[in-house]
Amino acid sequence: MIKGLIAPILTPFNDDLSLNNEIYNGFAKYLLENGCSGLAPFGTTGEALSVSNKERMNALESMVKSGINPKVLIPGTGLCNFPDTVKISKHALELGCHGVMVLPPFYYKGVSNEGLFAHYERLISEINHPDLKIYLYHIPAMTGVPLSTELVSKLKSKYPDTVIGIKDSTGDWDNTKSFLEIDQLIVYPGAELLVIDSIKLGGPGCISATANINSKNISKVIEYAHNGDWEEANKIMEEVRNVRLLFQDYAPIPSQKAMLAKKFNEPLWRNVRPPLVQTLTKDQSDILSEKLRNEYNFRI
Image (cartoon, rainbow, N blue to C red):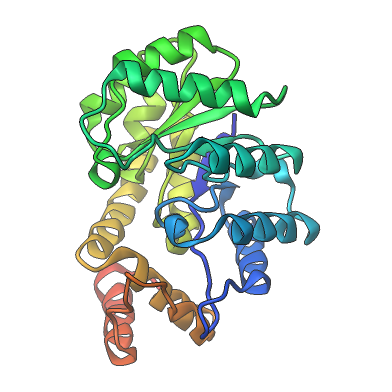
């Protein structure tokens, strides 16, 4: 497993909204040098469903070619159809990625556990790769398709060496705890707010959107927690929590991109793909940056 903080890395776009691989690679290296143990390209925070399969594959190839170790990458590959999910999953595995993070098929709602199990079973059969490691991606607020503890347990039981983990983005501790109770399942909370409790039950860390802007502090929380220094972990968590909750008051993806544009003096970071829009003007970005510095002792 990847122990520590994993960043669902934001995706930079040019003014014509093409993907900028040079900025992407540089930012990936920055995150890995500043507290992150791994990266999860093309998740929700990375605007994955606005990025084509070809763009995803080109970006991963460029990232690895730039010198990033593929063993720290868990790219998102879950789509609503088998052929495309199989194609980009195989590609990631052939590049040497640690594993793939797979959403459930999310178009049809109200589907049964039986249907979801059949989907993952077929997916595993069609990918048919000896190094396949699947991390289930549980984010029902976005997909409308929850993954029950019963389903996850059944998948883990039948495919113990393939279905190895889950990212739980419900933000519900009881839900995350139920996954942690499944034997040998690697569980990453989808936010840092639950990471201390998760580590107490054997969790390795978390996959957090705000790792894109607060990787050093979040990684410190995780490090102290793994060392059993709960007092220091909780102390730093207070600052981390404040920053997290502040960004939850904004549109998280556009606001974080606006802060990266300021941090790196790179206006291209402000670009998002429709249907998202950049909700912060440059003046509002200045105000948010000042608020972070003056009220939260956090400097972009």
